[in-house]
Image 1 (cartoon, each protein chain N blue to C red):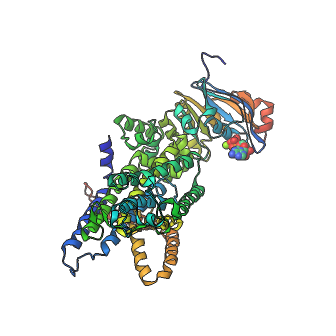
Image 2 (cartoon, rainbow over the protein chains, first blue to last red):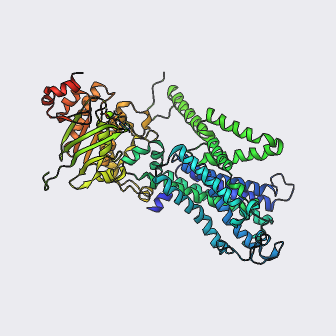
Image 3 (cartoon, rainbow over the protein chains, first blue to last red):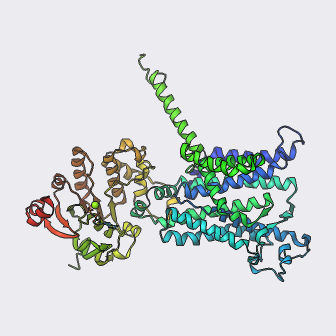
Length: 386
Length: 249
Ligand SMILES: Nc1ncnc2c1ncn2[C@@H]1O[C@H](COP(=O)(O)OP(=O)(O)O)[C@@H](O)[C@H]1O
Ligand SMILES: [Mg+2]
């Protein structure tokens, strides 16, 4: 039964998307590592982590789309799950530094020595082991989403009220992580990482591997999301989005469905955050900023919510635009982003991918009717010439 | 109440008020097994509110609501009541517009409602056959792949009735099914509901007198939140209080 559900995930265009992602996972690292410097097809060194970062953003937008596009829950706090996954990875990377820090303390990260910590806080235990950190990457965002969702969905908080409390959640975390006495490096966050699983983070091969891991993780998330939205579970989510109380009267426990989608989405966002941190080399409380979570919504809206490809396209395009813009007119980026959001809302309510899909369907319908009109339709019986 | 043969649905002394206004006032009502009952009454009489109470959307301030003898509906939520076998058709047709006709029926089909059963659900041949039968009953076979949003008003009403059939409830509550239907559609709908009532209890709320006549059901007249009269259509239409409060208008 489970295999059949997984196979169904590959209906439609999923196999194509997964094939493209796997190709990228191989081609970008290979071109960077094996083509000589100066070759026109070589991906330059600084591009590899940049593209890798886009892929983690794409994963984050995909996660948001599962709850927003398919289940109608507009979360304005998804940045929090991403950041928590990032912090879990950052804690592992900090402990990997060992005695190579400025203060050469074998156990305590530099910021703790600086703040006169005598011993490692209990919640840092275990983060010297990768497997433990990896479990936390999934568990912490997942658990927070589960507990938050449990209360919010059971008390039937919906619509704009839910959006507001998700903003409040990420804002509260922002304030908490800013504090030095929380034990997460305060304002500066976690940085100066040296290596991951024993491989130096600065090495081209490590960056290539992280890029490939991001592409594969995105492909796997895509398969999972596809398996969800193509199943009856996915149809119930859409039903909840469109007519929540009707779904209840059919006997579905709407809160459980929302809780499932919200938690699954938070886990995907957390994994994305964990892949993001080693590629950008830092995680700080700024990642919890409410504005970050709103940006994720914009990527998803631009690409096309309620489609699985849309958020990926949106995240990559908007962030490529941001990289370019902040290089050329840094002060105008927020205006450009706001303008883009308004334009998309007005002119492309279904986003880029939604508009393309619509155009494609219309074109096909025109072709079919045109063919039917001039009688060149491949009909089995010869039709009389007109 | 006869303890050995309790009625399917039993409401006694039910009241509910909204901001001091008594929408339902000491209402008592019984629905027997396999009965087709029509409920009429002027606008604002509390017909929809009564359905809200039975289906767990609104909690009564006072009174008892029992299903199949001893299940206290006032303690259960919408999903639990639906799972017990009470299906509801809303006054305004509410189908899932961005799903196809087929998917609407598949969602309604009586199956385990938990998240993981839904995720790993694959329709069996039996399920497919059942849905095809329902499609034929509600005359939508030709449009099975159409999005529900593209159906006409009357077709949406039928799709919603089809969804109730797929739920296979013991009790069906139908709120103004023929509002906005053509005369021909209205006649068809009465036929459909009589057909459905052969194997379960059906409660129909309606204004349309010729439709009620077609249903040939026992009639309960509701006014200002309580029962005014009960009996055959001819019996209640002769009742002076009914004429004054409703028919006379
Ligand atoms: N949720 C609510 N809040 C306040 N008043 C309500 C609510 N639901 C119904 N009412 C009021 O209760 C009365 C009965 O309404 P309703 O049951 O919809 O009547 P009917 O379906 O018989 O036309 C109306 O006066 C209506 O305004
Ligand atoms: Mg009503």
